[in-house]
Amino acid sequence: MRIGIALTLLLPACGVAGSPLGGLQAPSQSVRPAQQSVTEDLSGGRTFNFTIAPKLPAFDFKLIPDVQPPDQSGNAESTIREIEVYRGGATRAFQHLTGCDLDGMEPPGRGAEFFTAEDVNFDGYKDIFLETGQGATGNESGCVWLFNPVTGSFDYSKEFSGLDRFWLDSSTKRILTYERGGMLGFVYGAGIYAVLGNRPVLIRSESQDWDEQKKQFHCIVKRRSRNDMIVVRDVWGKNGEDDAPCDPSVLFKQFPAQQ
Image (tube, rainbow, N blue to C red; front, side, top):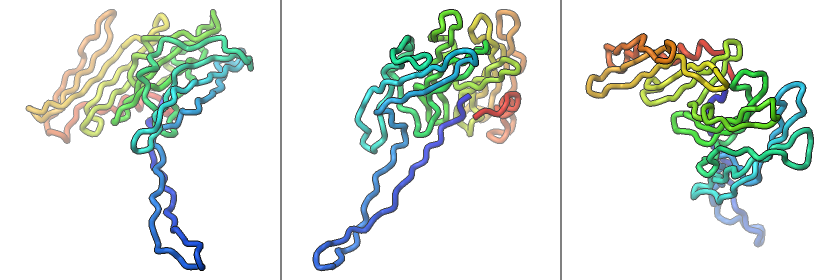
């Protein structure tokens, strides 16, 4: 669904200060360039236009900023305090998205797709995702509002919002979640979910950690059997850091490439 956040610092070229007096040139002096923010500047707010379903009018989402001053390094700190929803080119909002703790939102990385529309529950209507936090290892958290075709509005989903960073496979109607830890990503937790009763239901989990005392990886895989998650694999590595019994890339090969 959302693939990483690339942060790049672009520094403008240094200039040379000159003197207008008598055509004389002042001593060369480096001018320290302003650092470009590594976070997205949301101080001016944003507006997004999404088609939720082919037979519905387009929806506009106006993100109202919570304006904050930049940090000491010049990185943007403003976030979002409110989201207004407009339908079919209307000038008056018919809904304000609620349920999400916007007070705890972190500014997204520069260039990140932090506000998107995707059909997360596979009902044929796109839903709304707002990224509210991201970790140093690429983990991501956010809020999800599901489109309600009966009311024509968007309902906050605590269950979908509680998922780790996730990817969608519309062909199998499955969701892959992945939380990256240390050891180059070989310490991780992952899950595969089906959607039942408009909620994500865990049907397979895979977790791998590192035992510092044994100097070994330990991987546990579980599958759902009726109402319980049953251990189907419990294995330790044998050759230290070079032997991880589970490989998260195998999980991603089951899901189509996404941008």
